[in-house]
Image 1 (spheres, protein in one colour):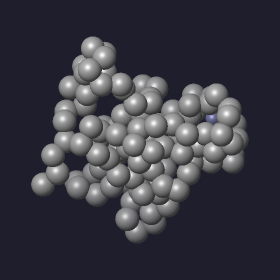
Image 2 (cartoon, rainbow, N blue to C red):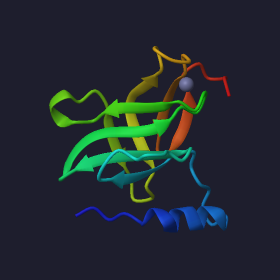
Image 3 (cartoon, helix red, strand yellow):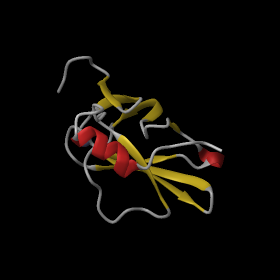
Length: 116
Ligand SMILES: [Zn+2]
């Protein structure tokens, strides 16, 4: 069994400066969320099966969907006990704004190293 703090606790600790809130926090949802909060990575898991990760693009705010379903897995998502997601490989919005970034332990890392 994996131990993980409830997301609300991590948000609380971040708000009270006990912890620094990472750029992204992950939360598991049973279906695709109707609206996405920025800086939250939603992992859609249906009946125990990973399907998609949903997040908003840190550059343009577009909805990004990453396939995490095992049969056609394109991305690997792991989440640590503080709900910090790590996604591999990188996320590259080739059809959209061109943003190219990594998510590592909740941190947003731009692939070009400088763009904000
Ligand atoms: Zn974008």
